[in-house]
Amino acid sequence: MIILLMNLHFGEPIMLVNRERELEALEARYKSDRAEFVVLTGRRRVGKTALLTAFARGKRALCFTAYLDSEASQLRRLSRLVRKLEQPHFEPPPDFTYGTWEALFQTIGALAAEERLLVIFDEWPYLSGSSPRLASVLQHVWDTTLQHTRLMLVLSGSYISIMERDILGHRAPLYGRRTAQLVLRPLEVWDAAAFFPGYSSEEVIETYAVVGGMPGYLLQFSDRYSLWENLRRAVFRRDGFLYNEPDLLLREELREPRLYAAILRAIAEGHHQLNAISRSAGIADRATTTRYLDTLRGLGLVEHRRPLGPRPSPRGWGSWHLADPYLRFWGRWILPYTTQIEFGEVEQLIREVLRPNWDRFVAVTWEEIARRHLYFLAGQGALPFWPEEVGSWWSRQAQIDLVAVHRARRNAILGEVRWRREKMGLRELEDLQARARLWLGQERGWELWYVLYSRAG
Image (tube, rainbow, N blue to C red; front, side, top):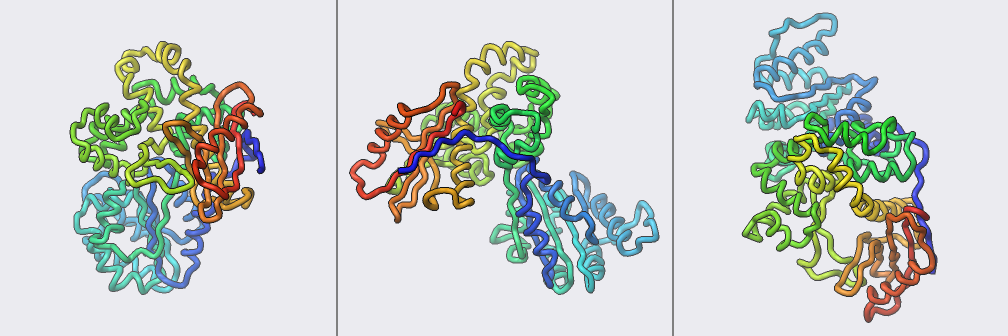
């Protein structure tokens, strides 16, 4: 038996914050001897544009960021960029255009015929949305011309539904053309610490419990201010950057944002079973709730967890949870109190509602951090075995916050995770060992390790 006591502290900041693997993957494609078609996806504010900007630096590149506009305007703006690359010593007139998308893509192919050319279409869904035929045109030119050049094409987008429609789905015009796909994910808490060098580890964790690992959200907070002042400035005001962010996300990605918001609110308030979520959200049909939850899971906003025991849990068991800390904060503390925030009752909200419940709220994120930290340690080879799964376990008799298993080898790590000011010790370990016997049940031959994650040590 090995007993580990974990009390996380963060090291020196890493800039560009922990995107080295993504940059290395892009560089490897850039250095290949063939045409490359790379798809980059990730949620709004996760840092796709920043990553691509860093990657394009010092390269022969054409970078185009699309936005909501007409097809003619998008074609004209992009045409002028391509023309400048084609004739760098001449400024094209404001109304210059290649006339058609096919002519523009053919020109790009000519520019990449002998020499590597990086072309980035950032926010592809906006570009594609301006021209329903654009994906089909690009597919045709890629098949006939571009795949035989030295082009590296990168399509980046936040809206998964449109990326599926154009590129990733089996019926998409560009299906099968991509040579690589990257999904940019939120930062871990130890990476997010780089944004707040003046904060203690505890303050970083509390901030992460609010905004999570989205760089665009982290940038709205500053270690020049306390957590509560950051909340006042960026969240609890009608013109705050983060106040309506989830609402915008739902409206841009989904057809019925109100029902999806009701489901997120229900989960944030502690309703994790399907029936309870349906009742709280006001949805009579369980099948409808299930369909909406599956859509939210596809967007990476919710996740379904099953008790992680010595044997796999039966299908259908489990509970639904929010996969993003800021959605949890928004659903718990903003959506239900919109009226109070709109009328400027922020101080009362913080004093009467947030502060009394704050530690319990942060504890949920602290448990998730502990689970992610075990994955991190496994990647470093710092655990006694490599876990196939990491999660938690619960039954009618007991709950274990942290479980990591390798069932074939009958190895498991069981952990207690607490966000309290009191230190953990032998009593907590003995209690965990007692619950471990319930976890094992009738199972024999398992080797168990125990770990305690504590706010106070």
